Structures are given as structure tokens and as C-alpha cells.
Amino acid sequence: MSFHVPEKHVSLFSEVQQRFRMLLKKRIVTGIDEETLDCWLANFRTDEERYFAACVLGRLIFRSKSMIDSSIDQLLNCMLPTYLRRKGLYQYDDIEGFLNSIQQDNPAHFLRFVGVDGSKQNDTGKSGVVVIRNYKRRARIPKSITTRPDALDQLPAHVRCVVFLDDMLGTGKQFETFAKTYALADKSDIHIVYCPLVAFQSGLNKLKESCPWLTVLPIETLDERHQFFCESTQTTGLWAVDEVNTVDDAREFYDRLATKRGIPKATRHGLDLLLGFEDSTPNNSLSFLWASSDDWVNLLTR
Image: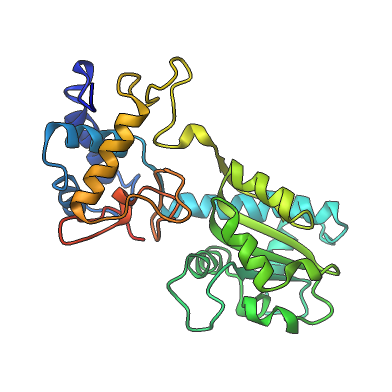
């Protein structure tokens, strides 16, 4: 049987959109308004398409600005200080002392924060730039202890640790290329830490193997269970989302609809995730969320 709406889920579209509208009204999901939601839902025109939309929307992993702020707090209050203590770099009596130090306009600080991309000073549209902007806003980090990737060779000798900030570690290939471009493996005299807001487990495994000199501190980790076309653990071949349709049928339905509406079926680093941030959506997520065309309206900002 081809992709279809299971009898037990005939009301799913109505139920999911009502729940999502409630999240919007309560400001749990921010950065999306009801008009944007309506336009995105209008992309789906048949019963099967609307059911598919409900499956997507119901499994969306969305991180609002307040959630991102909580992740930043987790890194700066807990994870990074723990790492620095372990490396003998933490010379503060308490967390407040450390936080105060990274808020001071002090070029002599031993830390530098770097966005993973956006190497040019006027490059404002890249995810790494967006993330480091969020850190500056939330933690009041001054420009003096940030730097651009193309300036790493000019770091003063007193800098002992460089913290790379990013929204998403997906396949690991992008950071691997980034590390080669800026010869990070050659900087053996500096502690190098990569801190994505979210990491995918296979990407973590890849970097552990290809970049053994690198410490990765993800704030949140996803794995294959979070992939939209994940197979059921109970019945081989069935789609884990509804345990009725097959993975192949669900994938074929998605591919066919994407082609019909002029949006990409996949991206180079696609992982079939449904992850979105208020300011940006990683290209590891399904294009149904962020793509646009003459016949498709996006829900999230890419």
C-alpha cells in the first residue's frame, strides 16, 4: 500500500495545528506568527499531504531565543568552567568571577570566542555569526575576547583557549573542512573547544576520529531516533512515526511532493532532522521547513 492516512490518525492534522497554535499564543514558540503558520499549512492540499504536515509539525524540535539563552547559560556556567578546571586554566574563586572576567573589555584574557563560519568581518548571514551574536547579547561578551577565524594566526601568546561557537554539528564534515582551512590541528599550544548548541551523534563520532586534538562540548545531542524517516524498533521497514506506513513509502511521498513544488529533496549535509532555531534553521533539517519556491512557503528562516 502506498503512503496513506492511517484510520487512527484521521484527525491528526486538526489536533496538531491546534496544539501548535496554543504554543504560539502562550509564547512558548516564538519567532513564528499564525499568518506564517497558515501560509505553510496551505502548502499541503490533499488529505495525505495534510497528514504528512501534521507529522512534521508534531515532531518539530524548535529552540526559541529563551531556550538558546538557557543553552548559553549551561555552557558558560557549567560545561566550559568544568573543562577549564580540568585543564588547569580556571583561576577563579567562583562562577561569578569567571562570568565577570569574560564581560570585561580585556584583550589580555586567556580566552577567545570564535564563530565557526563568517570569517569576513561583514559576513552577517552565517549561522556562526548569528550564534556568537547571541552569546554577546546574553553574556555581554565584549569584542576584545572574540576573533574571526581568519585572524587566528595573529592571536597573542597569552591566549590559551579558543572556543568555537556554532548552532549545529551535523555530519561533522563542515567543521572538518573548517578545521583544515584554518589549520587548527597545527595549533598544539592552544586548547581548542568546539561548542555547538546541538550535535548529531554520528557527527560527534566522526570528529572524535578525524580530529582527536579537538574537545567537543555539545549542549544538546540528537541521534538517529530523531530522524524523521527513522525505522520502527518494533517492525522492520515500518516508519517509526506512525508504525503503519513504511519508511520507503514515506520517503517516496516526501521526495515526490518536494520535486512537484520545486524545493530540494535533500541537501549535502541533510540528516532528515526537524530542528529549527528562532534565528536560523540548519541545512541538516528537512527542506519542508525552510525552503521556498513559487509553489512553497517556508515555515522557518534558513
